Length: 190
Image (cartoon, rainbow, N blue to C red; front, side):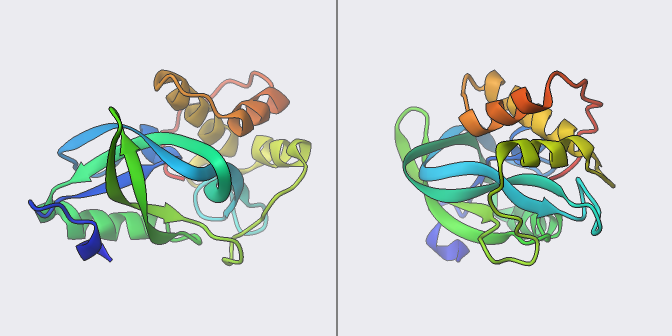
């Protein structure tokens, strides 16, 4: 899979659309805003290991195909000598139902590159799927796991997107549904 996305120098791009926007805990040689066309961010993935527990999972972001949609995030170029270490770390961090996928990213300004991302597809063991917005917001407002309160994840994502000058209607609607809750800024993983 990596062979198809490696640049001539052996580096590869990785796209973050959730906690990887504000908390990349791996080395990279370049980073910048990026957009993924044809996908929407949704809080449809369960988090049993970071933002919730098995009996009370939180909800974290994944991507769903959506014609005409654009998902904003952050792209990271990973050096070849760090790639195995970075991927091992991310495979562990994203173990709760996420798998590696290759996509084409648009980097600013209007440059397209093949990229790796972690996607939680429908049918994985932690998939929660769509639900009424109020129900998703209630779940996020009350869930807590080893990495902290689920609401902190949502609020950090909202702040990170705002810092990029980007808007996400789904994220903003969830924040509005929950109300202005102070974040404890745990800085933890998804």
